[in-house]
Length: 125
Picture 1 (cartoon, rainbow, N blue to C red):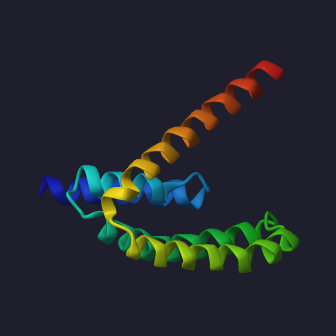
Picture 2: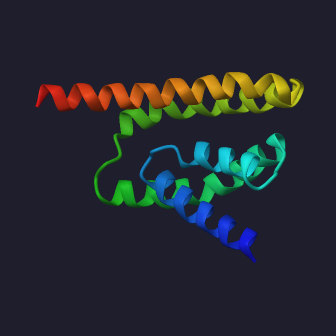
Picture 3: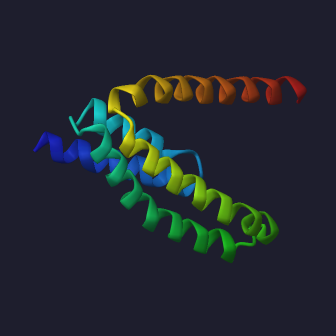
């Protein structure tokens, strides 16, 4: 019963974060691999399946509210799709243990960047 509640809480939190564009998918990967015992590749697949409906819903509401910059979207869609495909193919060709350290470094860098930018914004106000 507790595992179901943890899974539900993680899905709810990451869905909300994803819809805000905060990176809920990253949190979902970490929670699945660390707390739920899901393998890294399986977690990636679940994360991608989880992302599709949340991204679609978020895109709909962002467009409806006038927050979608069509020029940027047009410029980013093709290279982003190609990079995602290349990353997926590469991740299947590489040993999972080789992905863990770069992913951890990426998380540390991203978190540090967010903290520093928040601090700089606070100082400029």
